Length: 154
Image (cartoon, rainbow, N blue to C red; front, side, top):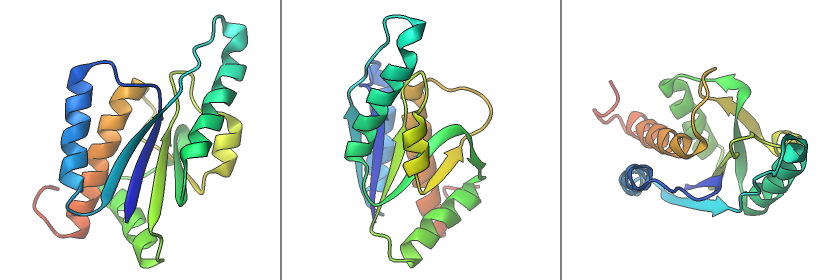
């Protein structure tokens, strides 16, 4: 299975980049994993936020392929085993590619949420969108270790 993490903006902090790279490397033994960074369109004022989010959403959707999972606070919450089961079921169904979409600091456009095959939430708290990439990559790695009955998951 090919896994794509498609996210708005570039990671600026080296510690986030290094952590993300580590989990992408670890996941490489189970899948082809790719991180795609799309353009960020920071609004100049609050009135421009909807236009900014729409443009970012268009960029995300251009890069999305396969089964699309959007990350949004209004999505379904799964524990690690449930997340693992989701990936396992997609593989059993013959899905060869899954794309996870992470919006910018102002969230995801409604068009992205409508296009997504599934919308997931990682809880009710707000994470910095750069950190969310690391959290997602770790959970993808954890899911594969659960599917492969490896001792990483406790």
